[in-house]
Image (cartoon, rainbow, N blue to C red):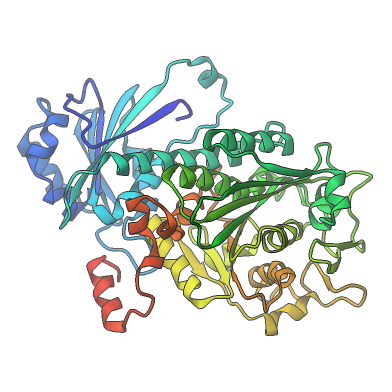
Length: 523
């Protein structure tokens, strides 16, 4: 998979399966709406119309199913016929699984995705997730030739016009963003320390014509970034705060995306055990997602000011490591008594969001992080946990999750009940809760929000992606699609406008919501 090039086309052209193996994928009802004339060029002469129709009739998705059409060269696969209201109508997670398991092998392959236009964006992101880039297997490093996978969308339903060149460009950019984020998260810390991550940021900046601002090492301490500096000061490679800023003429608001970029998390002196430390290369998933989304978003055109803020550090062990009982002053000016050095993400993000408010004058601040193991308990492996001070944005995050395939579900937002968990006799607050059975993921988010202030007048959104950032041992690139969909109304791109929830009326009546759910096959 590491050396696969994805190509997005309105029509992949005709080719018999022996020359170009093919997977045709979609919901059974959508597959049945596709005419034989639309697919025969990918299947003839070895697959006849009768075989195609028999295969469609044999499919019995529960929740998915597949059927070979000709040896190991052609297959058809069916997605779930219905999904629940907390899933994406695109069945994005099942798209990724079926592509990984059913796509025939070969150096030149084709995927025909049969779906409604509203599901194109999420389906493309799901397909991209099935093709990770990073690999250090010796066989793959010796293999110089690139494998090509051509993806064609066959649109069914009311608006069945072919995708435009602009829409295909959007899909290509978002797929690149998803795969970039996944590659960074998959890369181990000996190849992705803070130095390397800064190079990734500079490379994206160079591609979109932006020079990053970088505050690093002792300068962080001098300028008051006690959270980022305190977490990363013991590592060989110094911590950094890096900012990419897009400031177009005519912007009407300022948005900041703040990403947790802990390139490795040992837990610090509150050290993790031998079974919980492996996989902590993924603790930069929030920053990786923001970098991938920023790159794709700016390429598609963005009307408002957009700042990507990266809080980079390695939570390491050494003579200079932060100790439990140490007290740090964060960029907000508030003091924090450290009672758990393994609760480090909230420290770096608190500096990041305050910088976004104080120095960048952001109206909307979204922080994204692999923040808590408790997130997987709260909302599971597939749904990010969302907390926000704004009810409309909470609803928008859930809708953006459904339209993008990066699912999201709200956490409790109740600072008056939960923030007392951080009470300290010595400082303004501790950095870890007193009671680990009291809404841990919510409390972790509240710690970040407290440095902005619970009376801060802007919109603050916190997204915890600890579990969705990976599936098994592979990164998913989670968060890229969610960010692009959530802020799609500020894009110049029509497809991102379509998947954005913020352009739709937020005061939809119950009858309207019920009709919408039925139309979208939500139960």
